[in-house]
Image 1 (cartoon, rainbow, N blue to C red):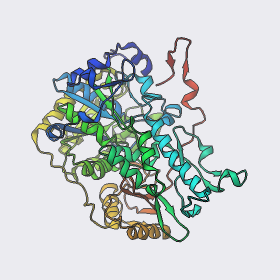
Image 2: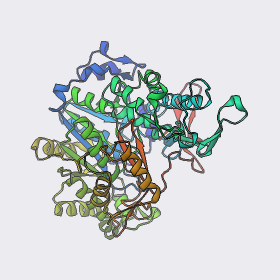
Image 3: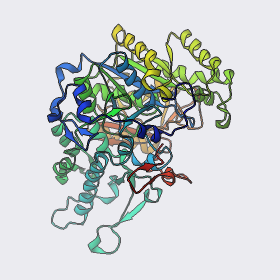
Image 4: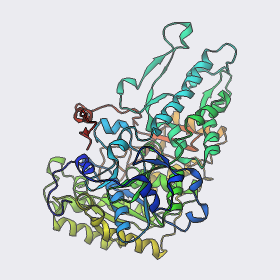
Length: 563
């Protein structure tokens, strides 16, 4: 390890320097025999669903890792999650990290990888970042099968449901950033090539099939939810669902392996379950319910994460996933970095490495709001200061002192350079909080409340907005959902991750703003309502110099450039 020295190795070089344990050895740590796992080579395996033990779930400790509002400086939530899991293992706790799967879009776009960093990574890093066990591919195919069935039904003369093509919102998906596919025309070429209509592509992580997989209890529930996907309306106004196209059985068949969680390991040899990967600014942003239950069945401590900050990932984790699955987290870790806090205090990216305590304290307003948010769920968070080499003692002490004033512990997590060793103090604080019994989780709202009230609660209490405004289209969408009898679903607001508001330029802790809902979509299969705020990008584009330019493979199959 690097110790106190600045590590010059890249993430992939560090990952390649580690000797992995055979996955059967990792499974044995959590009491699973090699006869009960489905091997994907030496270092990856699928876990069968019958390993879930419902009698054990409620006695294990569920730890959520969330963060402050994202910045260009990065917060390292996944890195801290993995380091914390290794830290808990080091202090003698039987622990599993339960995380999301990376999407290929970010891997080849900007980030170049999403499996942690430094000595706080999940392995095999290259496999997880690329095709892994094929889950994303299966989700993509299931989604696109429904799209093909819709267009085939529009074309058919003998099996036509009379769907109005103008009402079909179901696009196709692919797991790659490709802005040229955002808006496309299909059915061109002639009468035998389909009905011409405008549609487009989303990235696979934004697919409702992904959201459905992550919220399903089992195969039967998965199939039911797939059948509930809303397709559109007939010319005479009848609502059409995927079950009307008899699509759910074939879609579920494509997902027969994808529904099983994936077992891998951390650098510290802690078992890690990686499963599902929905967007957090559009969908619910958490791994599968099945994976979380699996972790709670096989370990005493489960460390999981939710995408982006507490206003998005954590809120949806609590109000959608925990309520759906009957989960009760007993501790929350809130990740912040000195750099990110200075950014929220107005420091430009180019100057973030310079000490600036006054800007840091201004940026603390963002952290303070996220602390308040977690307390609304009757859980007091522990702040993890994800350590960078240019952090100064004065800056660290300033954060800890302010947190102490707020009645919150703040611990330095030096996991990038030290792995689990750098998270032992944080791990002990998490154990103390989890075993104290002080957490008394309650969701923010009841699903039975009106749609408007649920949206208002999130916007005013979690985002800090003054009120919610609805466009004319949003009001029409709202009435349509009510007419369908689906007002009792939870709310999954699509909002920028860059700000607590719906304006990405408003960093820190904005005040005096309203949230504007421009459209409301129904994810009837996933089982939530999606109010859209601002301009949400479901098919990202590549930057001028994408990370793909740096990725290569040699004659021996060794991959470089993932970082």
